[in-house]
Figure 1 (cartoon, protein in one colour):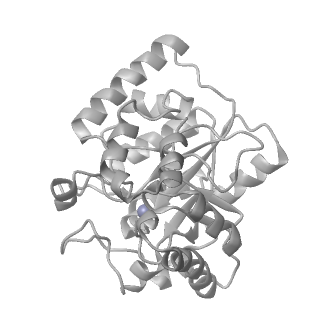
Figure 2: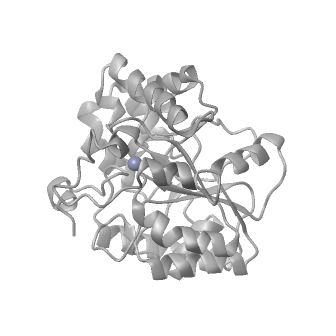
Amino acid sequence: MSGAWTRQGAVPGVGATLPPPVKAAATRVRSFWWLVSRRGRPDRSGLRILFYHRVSDDDDPLAITPCRFGEQMELLAREGYEVVDLATAVVLLERGVPAPNVVALNFDDGFRDVGENALPVLERLGFRATVFLPTGVIDGTSTFAWYDDDQPALLSWEEVRELDGGALSFEAHTLTHPNLLLLDDEASRREITQSKLDLEARLGRPVDAFCYPAGLFGERERTFVAEAGYRVAVTCEPGVNVSGADLLTLRRRQIDPRDRRLDFRAKVGGGHDTPLPLRGVYRRLRYGAGLKPEQEATVATTGH
Ligand SMILES: [Zn+2]
């Protein structure tokens, strides 16, 4: 277990959540409910975006094992899903093209093990994914707050440039991975805007997508994202994205290290499209003090 969990009681990178064993048990119950009520039939009403952080055997609440990741991707391939990056998925969403067999894949934070352990699987299966990079952390001028001195290796800029446009493409995730809600206007705007400019300079192409760190955002952050010129932004609110959805607050479902095969099937199939019942309460307890009323409203309601 990483220091982050014991120190903050939160799964790092995705903000406060339930303790892993409780979350896993609650997830399992819900997966069984989906299996029974839907007889395991996937809901195909819109686009689901799955997100991961690390693919590694390390003991880290953000790491799914390469073995389990491989099994999950094989399952998607066997069931005929087309697995695409965010940009591709959004084009389909904007066109209103019904794409019942499309799933979008994201990796947050730019860990090197994604290149080592996920990329070969994606290439073999013809899948694509989007990786969200906090540019200052990749630069080495900032570190993730939840690791002590054991921060796992990140992709280097050289690797990012080399990989971009293949099975992986890279998009923005602020400069330093802060809780944007706790920053003043100027700092919040800079995190959002400057990371786009930095990444565009590194990649030599426009960067259109943004990921709110830990999924924490309010109306203010959404406005800054729009003003910075992003076309698309993703949250950590679970759910399905249908045609006409707000492209600056797209929903995603995290795949957890403890998810078993049934949980994964249920997440892909729509059995986990709402937050776990206690999650909102837990997040408000964790973040409530730092939220302005309108932000709290956004954080509290976006899952519904
Ligand atoms: Zn992140």
